[in-house]
Image (tube, rainbow, N blue to C red; front, side, top):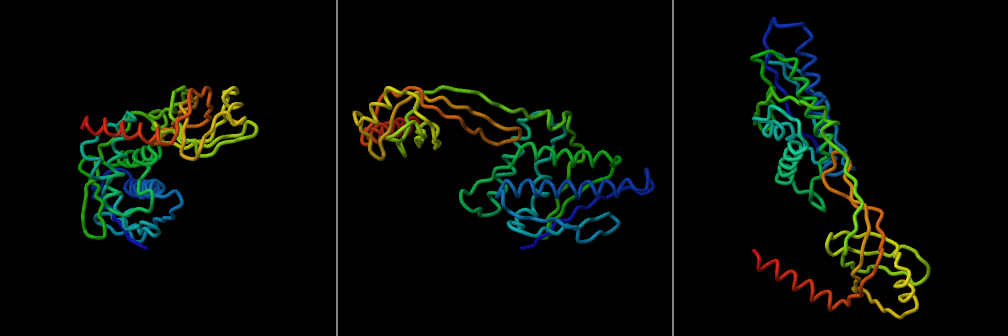
Length: 288
């Protein structure tokens, strides 16, 4: 699969050093190459896409870039999508700004193409910020009155906001988050252990997350392994769960790790669990 986009730099002659315009164009091509690949990985971490310079023209200076690989028809539109969301965005200094930008870009991607399961885009915010910062730095080479456009193979043209600037380095905008928490949760038992203290398999009803964890409530575990407590597939337990919630720099979502079941309060049979879930669903529906 193959598609292309065009970068057009309308420059003023006889201004500054001769190489200025060519350096700016090279930086724009590199920035859009990086941004296309950032979005590509947000669609599918294993997707392969290449952006190669096809043609260079003068007056105005134009670079035609060929995109080859998976989802290229959509990825070739990324420069235009980015141009659209840069309108009015002159200063970037907050994580929330990049997150909002990424959310819009993800919606564009989902609207433009049918993705394979799970049909969602997950663009790394830090990598996106670095690509946008490349664009901003390239624009610093321009003089007043010079403009930059991007054009797709259908002839649609969008102007790039060349006034966009980062007031902080992207690395300084984003912070890692890590926190250890304890919560009482209802855990669907997917796999139990009758001997020893190996990992059980659970799914948290509240967080809708599956995970493996040991049961550190030795008294309850002994009763279960002695058959004093009986659990069948689809049954659950109500328990105090300890886990670590974290988000890496630039990640879209929080992740969970290091689960432990500290205290088991009670066992819940499948029919009781389903009844409770139905009641909770009915309550939520009545509030809307």
